[in-house]
Structure formats: structure tokens, C-alpha cells
Amino acid sequence: MLARPDFPYRLAAIDIDDTLVGPDKQVSRENRAAIDRLQAAGCRVVLASGREHHSMAIYQQRLGLDDFVVANQGALVMHPSTGEQIWRRPVTPALAARLLERGRAEGFDVLLATDEGFVASPTSPWVVHNFAERDGTLRVHARDLDDEVTRAPLKVLWYGQTADVHAFSRSMTTELGASAEVVITTEHLLEFNAPEATKATGVAAVARHYGIAQSEVLAFGDSHNDVPMLRWAGLGVAMPHALAEAHAAADLSAPEADPNCALAVAIDLLLAGDTVSR
Image 1 (spheres, one colour):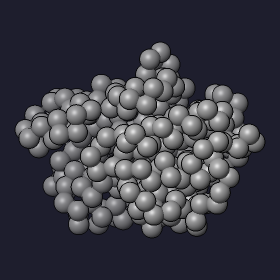
Image 2 (cartoon, one colour):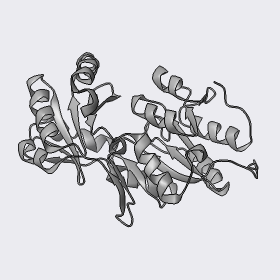
Image 3 (cartoon, one colour):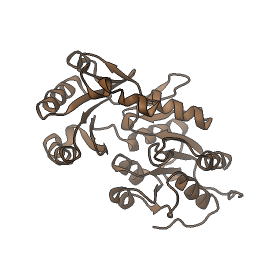
Image 4 (cartoon, rainbow, N blue to C red):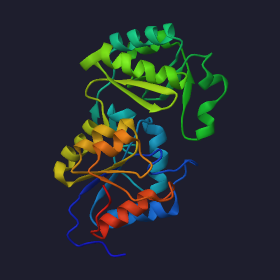
């Protein structure tokens, strides 16, 4: 397939879970090849995820990319190979301590995202049951969280039952107001970021760094934390299996396809100049 010579996008921001990768957490041959074609059309590709940057660097290497990653929901934009940071918006120690105390009181297991990976208490299920090892790219360290919050973590996570996650997403959004970003990332995780830490602000930092206009930015995503990015981008594309909120935020929706290669289908339609369904 030949790309249009006048392809109008110079930067593409791609979510990882359920966008770049399917349920098996692997990058399909189809998605890898489509990203190569996107780059050949003159479009820079960066990954934008709620994951911590070490985990994202592994996926970046698998794709043969060497660029910034928008990590921890946009709290950190860092180049894994050079260590250069162009955007950093951690949670303040005061808010982190408040969220740690409140999360514990409400029965959640609390984790913190740091520059070294995720930090959990020694008794956390993430440590005891080695949840991170099932993914193969995450790192979880067992430490004293009361001490760790004083170092301004990149985000705070509450791990618990789905019903509790959804209930507290609503109540904490109201309670915290503009002092924090509150988002559900999986059915068991409620996450808290600094007010300016979203995928949109992180991708915007990359665009500014390279002198790329907002109208020249593509974004692909599927979930709650992709909503700001899909709204901000010059063209936001929701995966066919995306949540309703992501579809509503996006300009376009990719056609139905195997979750492992739906991204490739969307990329190739755009490269060919075809319309992706709303």
C-alpha cells in the first residue's frame, strides 16, 4: 500500500494496552508493519500510556523506535535512551500523603509510580503474588509508602474491587476537583495524577519540542485515560472496541477488526486517504 504524498500528520501518539497490543500484550506483525509505514510517510511515532517509562521503553524497542515516551498518564515525558525529560508533573507530597491515607482507610491497596517503577508495601498483592511478573515488563518495588510519598510520586494508584473503583472515581473526582486528575485505567485501578498530567499535555510537550502543530498530531486510543489525548489531537482515532467515552472524544472510530491488528487497519486507511467510520 502506498501512502499519500501529502499525508498531513507529522506526529502520531499511540496508546499501548488494547491499542498497540491486544489481550496477549504482544505487538502483532500487522501493527509493527503499519507503524513502519506511518514513519515512512514522514510521521514521527511516540507511545503514550499510563504505564511507567521503563515498561514503555521495552515496547518502544520492540517497535524499533528511538524517541520520547509519554509515561504515567502524561506525568513524565522522557527519552529512554538519552534520559532527557521535556515534561514532568508529579503529584505533590501533600496530595500523595492525603491519597495514601485515604486509600488505605477505604480498603484499597495503594501503589505509587516513581522513576524506578511502581512502589507498593511489602504486603501488597502486587508484591506477594508477583502480579507484575505476569506482564513481563513492569517493575514493582516493596518499600515503605509513608516515606516514599515525600518524594513526589508521578502518580498514586488505588487497587481494589471494580465496584469500589467506579464508586470512588465519581466521589473523588468531586472531592478533589481541579487539584488532581482522577481516572480509571483498568477495572481494578483508580489513578490520581497532578492537574497538568494527562496524555494530552504530555503529547503536546512532544509536539512543542519538535515544532509540530496540534493540527498535525494523530492520536490512537481506547480507554478513559485516552480521552484528553483524543480530544486534543488534530485527529483522534478510537479503536473499534474502545469505551464509549473514548468514542465520544475521538474524531473518528476505526472499523471493526481483530483487536490485535485494529490499529494497523486504522493506520492503513488513513495512509490511503480513506475515511475511517465515525
